[in-house]
Each structure stands twice: as C-alpha cells, then as structure tokens.
Image 1 (tube, one colour):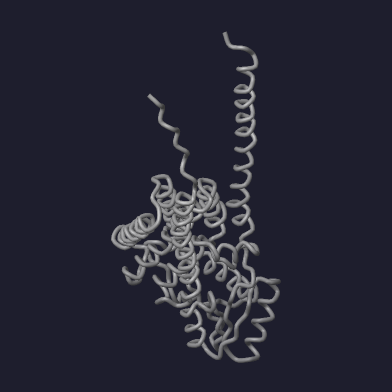
Image 2 (cartoon, one colour; image 1 turned 180 degrees about the vertical axis):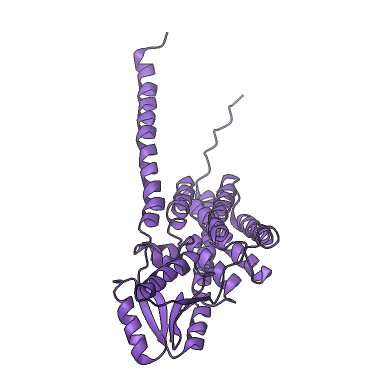
Length: 339
C-alpha cells in the first residue's frame, strides 16, 4: 500500500502541468491573434512611394492634393511619363500620377501589389471624380491573369515557411550534426525550391519570370528558415528550435506584407517583416518574377545572411558538442574483484 507522501508529489506535478496548459493556450491564442489580426486591421498607406510627373505647376497641385492624405504618400517628382514608367519598373515607386493635356493618367503596377494598385485607383480616381475629371489608368507591370489579386503568391509564403521549419526541426530531431546536417538542409531546400517553382509555373501559372531564378529564390527562402531553425537548435537545444519556429510563424509570416505591401503595415511591423525570411522572400520573389530582378539586392542579402548564419550555427553547435564530449572526464573504473 502506497503512502500519501509517495502519491502527493506526482499529483502536484500533474496539477501544475494542467494549470500551465490552461493558461498557456489562451496566451498563445492571444499572441497569434495580435500577430495576424492586428496588422491586417491596421492596413493603410504609410509613406507609400508614389511618383508625380508633368508640368511643374500641375505637379505642385497634385502634390497638394496628395498631401491631404496625411502621411499616406511619399511623393517623388519625375520629368515625364517615361521617367515615371522606369521608376515603377525599377520598383522605386508603386505607381505614378502623370498630368497630361487630356487629363491625369494613373500608372500602377499590380504585380508589385494588387492591394496598392486598387488603393491608388480609389484615392486618385475618387479625388478626380469629385472634381468632375476622369482618370485613365494604365497597369505598367500587371499581375498574372491567373492570379490578378496576388492571392496565390502571397499564400505561398506560409507553406514555404512551414517547409523550412519542418526541415530544420527534422534535422535536429534526427540528431544530424555538422556537415551532414548542413548538407541535408541545403538538399531539402533545393528540392523544395524546385518543386515549388515547377508547380507555380506549370500548374498554378502565377509566376512569369525565369524559372531557374525563381527556383533559386524559393530555395534560398526555404534554406534561410530551415538553417535558422536548425542552427538555433544546435546551439540552444529544443528550446532554440521552438523559439525560431515561433518567430517565423508568429512574426515573420504576418509581418511579411506579402498580401499587401510593407508600407501598408503599421510601423515598425513593415520594417521588421523585411528583416525576416518570409518578408524578404516575398519581396525578392516579386522582384525576380515580375520586375527582372529590380530592387532585389536588399532582400537577397537578407536571406543570404539568415542562411549563412544558420548553417554556421549548425557547424558551430556540432563543434562545441564534440569539444564537450572530448573534454569531459572519463568515468572511473571500478577495480576488478580479487578472486
């Protein structure tokens, strides 16, 4: 018959675990709601780069009208319509208002962000309609016909992030270390990128750039996530794996701006999102697929740093564990019994 003292500690431990679960689940739900719902509920233009071209006097009047949207637009002046076209294609601005003798013409780039293109049409055309003027709209870099709202491209961010998390966690759980772990991460990312690019072109038809360049982007994006997850796991153990996975899921994805644009999110959410692999990957994929690689250096460097630091942490973690094993004292041998 067991004594009360033998059964009390397990019961207390079970009660503590139960309380922890009951408290932790609502906290995680609140955190997820904040991370995903709050940026979406606060979506609005914030210093959104917008070009203005035409005669100086007319441009000044347009700037004055745009300034009525307090803090919404960051206005860039251009000499003429071709210069505004180039600025859009170089991803310097999301659109431009060109003043012509026939009336204002709005240049957009739905491939950069369908949400921003729609917002510009509403803001500029609405203002002109109030003045009795009709605005001609030209989509300089249109989104693919198979994905006019950009929903398929923005939805691809989460599966790739999940693939990276699964690869990083899998390498850690399988006990792979050093060069073996790094090789597994690179190989998994390359295969994931190839499959994703093939599906996006052949089946979905939502990417229109060079397939191999897009494969490289998707590979680098997956590797940046998986290497970071595995690298922090190699240094901190399971806690590091969970921390990096939660960072990617609860911060990287909702802060990526893939569904709208980084400048449409509250600050500093938009900036933080571009420092993390999902946001940098979405921006780089748009640049490579629709804009011939314009403005791709920044996000490409961000993903490269994440991948390099993650792989470095994997190798460092293996080295530290090997050193700890070799320097630990060997267990003392018991003397053999004298027969």
